[in-house]
Image (tube, helix red, strand yellow):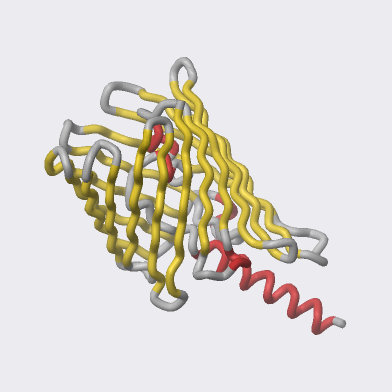
Amino acid sequence: MFYIHVMKGFFFLVGLIYMNMTLSQKPIHFSFWNTRHNPTFSINEPNFTYILYENKFFLKEWNNKLVGTDIKTKKGRISMHFAQRGNYNFSSNKTSIGYAQKMSPKLNLGLSLEYTFFHQAEIKNNPALLTPTFGITYKHSELNTFYSSLYHSGIIFHNNGLPNCLLIFWNHKINESSSFATGCITENEMVIGSFGFNYFYSDCIKFTIGINSSETPIEFAFTCSLKSFEFLLQNNYHQKLGISNQIGLAYKW
């Protein structure tokens, strides 16, 4: 009996690490689809509601579902989302609320709080975590914008919930149809370098490809806007675990 409880605890611990190692997923395009990495990414958007579904490594147990909304206020905007990964036996459930505001024509600041509850069947004292995310966007000129955010890795026993990841990126507009972004993400003592290229086929269609130095070195994203709707298709490749697909649909008003 003791052995069974020890093994349950062991697999629960492994599950927490595995479930959250994907967190440090790098945003390869700085848009409202990635406000959970930085609340200021949606600062210039209208009101919107969106859903995301991620097929993680073709393992249904690790599929991620997310629903969120982002509303303008008098001085800024409020964002909220709920995400769930896993199944009845083991899952992580995240609820987040954030606020972003334009401080000047060039500077935007944002803050969000995320509450994560981990669940495993047959374990009474499931852990939970409350973590903040701080975000900043600085538009130096029409061609150059800088993004930075400070957030927590999502692994429950790291740093007591205090931020331990730093994201710093520079986005440069090449011309009306293309731009690139480069930067890095630090997590504890690890540094991940990243580069992304954006191609705007039209006002409605955008392609993004990204490379980085993590175990997920290649990422691709496609977005298509049609009137009040926007569609997202994103793929990434993990060197050991394979391909993950993500689709999303947003309604703007």
